[in-house]
Image 1 (tube, helix red, strand yellow):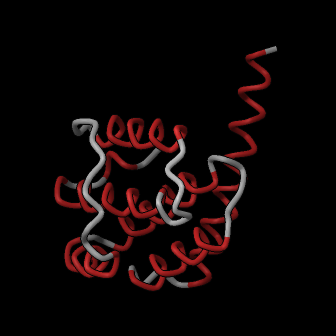
Image 2 (cartoon, one colour; image 1 turned 45 degrees about the horizontal axis):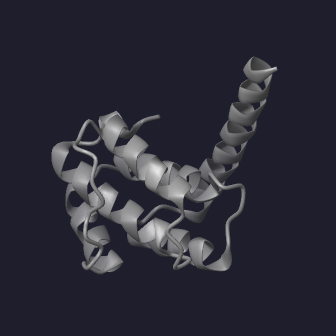
Length: 134
């Protein structure tokens, strides 16, 4: 939705976070691979799965040096949408989101607001899909 607002450096770092996110539960499902392709398309970068050898905290530290508050909020929102795409959020994914929230210095209040808005977005997306499919 908003990923096109990231700059070139932030795009690759965000994609690295996505690689960690989809592996948070140690399962890389086919729909997650499709999500990575869609994210690359939205970021306007070649479709690829980045190495996730770099620790998450190192990625977050780099983002803190270059990303604005707005860009951090975009990344959090988009990560929530990515992880909730399958309709569930397990403990490992929840822990990952909390690590990112803290690492990007996003307040609990802002995170809760973004989480709620992500849920509304996903419900509306499902409803719209049903409306056009029937």
